[in-house]
Length: 60
Image (cartoon, rainbow, N blue to C red; front, side, top):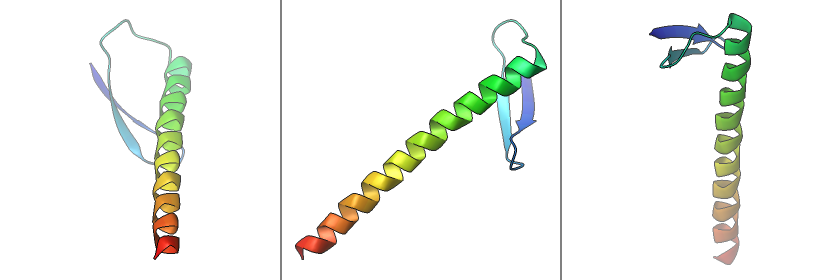
């Protein structure tokens, strides 16, 4: 079963259920947790790229 959900900023996500149905509150909680994990990973990668580029510029 596929369901479309939105986060607080209005972004849409498609969620595929492969297991038993969960309550809407639990679904929202899990969605926030997943979004948080990906957001942190994105920020970490951006910070790594920024530091790498800045260090590269300092070596020139």
